[in-house]
Amino acid sequence: MEDTLEVYKQPYDEAQPLICMDESSKQQIKDTRTPIPAKPGTVARYDTEYERNGVSNVFMFFEPLQGKRFVEATDQRTAIDWVHQIRNLVDVHYPQAKRITLVMDNLNTHTGASLYKAFEPKEARRILEKLEIHYTPKHGSWLNMAEIELSILSRQCMDRRIPDQETLKTEISAWQEKRNTIARPMEWRFTTEDARIKLKKLYPTLSD
Image (cartoon, rainbow, N blue to C red; front, side):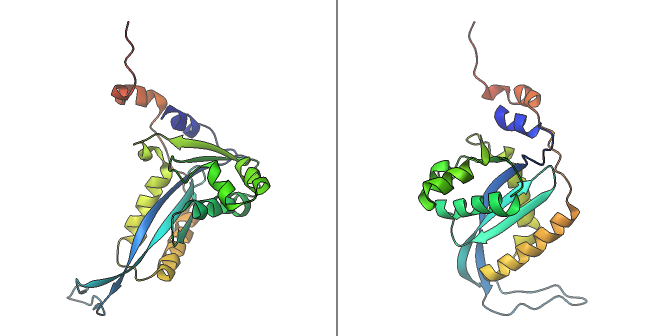
């Protein structure tokens, strides 16, 4: 926990940006009957019956000090899907960075070993050397600012029926563009000092 909190205290460095990564899922749901839109005097109406139409995984990469995010919907959340997202982070989104500080949860697919499953050793090593990885602790996903951003995405964009992945990608892209236009840094106020007081029970008790 303290490792993540200390990372968050570091000032902005263009050569080594801080990126928080998280992922979630979205079930696609199709209406079986055409909804009736709202009009003066009446609310929108839709049938409670629906048709499940698959599930997409949503990858979120969030740069809190710059208020930028990159979101991608994929078919699955395998190790291979993750490593391709990581390569895009390194080569497409931050090619100018000498190194990227990456904060994420300790999922079994989120490891350097996953890179070697998808790429030749030389390529896997090249990508891995561009990363400084910091894992949030078990049961400590709330420390990941990307999880907060995913919650905002869910409330503002995905909290409704979305029929298919193509529509989901279109909606996410529009949301991302709007949020990145605002580009407000996220203020993280919970510090190591706060943790030692408010979460004292999580620390080992030292005997005299």
